[in-house]
Amino acid sequence: IGNIDAYSGPAAVYSSIGRTPGAYFKMINEQGGINGRMIKYITYDDAYSPPKTVEQARKLVESDEVDILFSPLGAPTNAAIMKYMNQKKVPHLFIASGATKFGDHKDFPWTMGFMPCYQIEGRIFAQHLLSTQPDAKVGVVYQNDDFGRDVLKGFKDGLGAKAAIIVAEHPYETSDPTIDSQIVKCKAAGATVFMSMTTPKFAAQGIKKIAELNWQPTHYIGNNASSAGSTLKAAGFEHCKGIISSAYMKDPIDASWSDDPAVKKWREFLTKYDPEADRNDLYAGIAYVVSQVMVQVLKQCGDDVSRQNVMKQAANLKDFESDMLLPGIKINTSPTDYYPVEQLQLVRFNGERYERFGPVIDGAISKA
Image 1 (cartoon, rainbow, N blue to C red):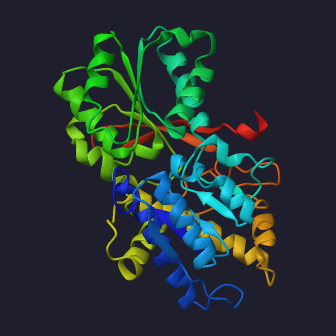
Image 2: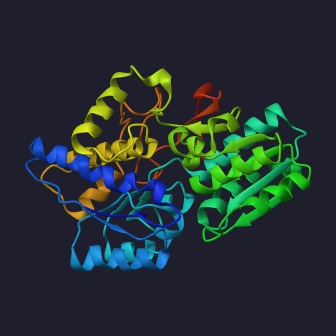
Image 3: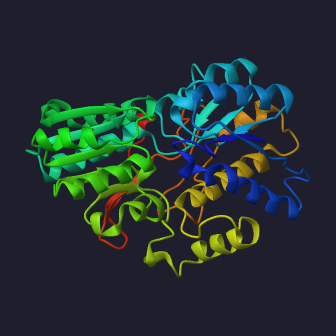
């Protein structure tokens, strides 16, 4: 099993998504493997740079001869290798991204995402905004790539005829040092709501700049950058009260989960197998869940671990539950549904932790 992650560069905060599965598979191997087979796990750094991703994917497929490329990080990086992976017919599975394009089962049958689709999240934020502040003025800062544009499309689709409430819309590049100027422009446009469609480093910058400007918009942040343990902590909890996001995982920094058996078990796993990991790292939690899903797929494969059967089983997950997912959230796939996680819950940061509110929302894009 091969993996590509950003162990350096602007998205290095996600490095546990690549590192922690190695620890999980080590535990599985110690327990006897899967159907008598051991997992060999190889992970490389691409620094969140698509040309480097291409280089590492070729190395994994052609030199290391991996059977599966598992949980590689990022929308722009994986977009750069989709065609190659499908031409080589190597399972390109459970990508650590919510880009809608990674669920295109017709044109890219060997590629499947994992995280909730960004367009679903964008639509859910729009629904909430229209129900609570229909006359708001919205400022948007988005990453100028597949990820940022995907969230923006979902948000605009959700606003529908009310899309004119967006009064400022500013992209940024991952190579930019800050998004300060974009934040200033949103405030100057009179925005009363700020939509942060960013990765963690820039989300934290945005929170700090908004505080510095003494601006107090209703602030939404996508779940990919909402970790209290990394993004909000880096920005300072005192600046984060009221931030709205969405969740599908139990956030380990949330004190309400401190006595939860699943979170305790996960922390014990980290202590034994991944001691480098931060005990409150939500991304190490995500890596743990996606590793559980990969193991389930391999169990379903039985004695046939051909690439074809791995893809067949990945597209045949029925109500798979992980104890680290929020209650009521289940993983389902089918040959025509390549979006494993399609349910989300809105959450609001109270200054110390996120509080869930409202129901679990099913935004199944494949059925939309």
